[in-house]
Length: 320
Image (cartoon, rainbow, N blue to C red; front, side):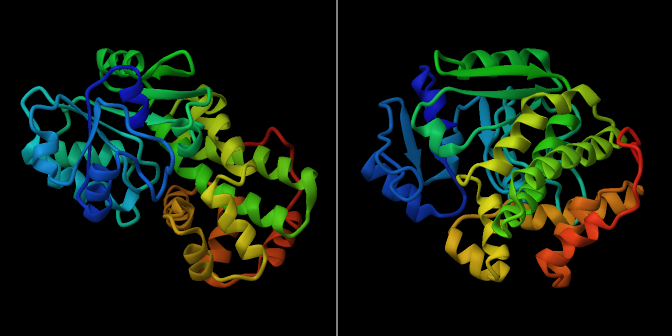
């Protein structure tokens, strides 16, 4: 995201509150050799190991951390924000300890009237870094903020659409990671394309059930942040969550798979968070439930798939 904003002419500072050694290396290397090698920084993108210096004078702040780090990150940067600052995030997932979505966490930390936005949709970092054509959704409680961000990040090979459905966009980003682990397991077990598309389609139904119950607009889930992100994450091996599923199907433990992938696999925590929220609301999410059982109750992947196939038959249009 920093690269994309810089490429379209924004003055971008890249900072953080962890992995400061990586930031220091980026200052010297003018690229992120660990995660995006051979993608040089534009002249208007500068890495800052000092978060206070990074945020000084900045109006718009984009937070891109795993969901379990969002509250701490917002708490850290809050005293460093200016009076006209606006905050957006590309964080995906419910907060595990509270079951809250990112915008709810932000409201608690920054205040209910603070201008915020969420960037989401089918965007693999490697492909964005390579400058490949990409589209995403920006949802905000402030129409001007959403439009400003969309204009600022869009280019000949990057297109941003705006939305006022923060809940829908965030739920799409949260649930798809857990479903992608299931898709990876299905493929890893050799169940084929028929099983994969059934899992994606019925997973979308589960995603919509939960989102609508939380106040989202149903049509949001047919867009980039819903179906688009779900299909991408379930079908391409650039997806860390899909690769986690493939590893579990091969008999590896969660810890072994995580060590092999070498980056945060959001779907592991997302499966528990989504399972807990759905259970609290009484929303039926059988695919997410089976992914949860595999990750947290030691159920074998093949047994979980068989449990799904044994479920009571019902009309496809039935939503509960």
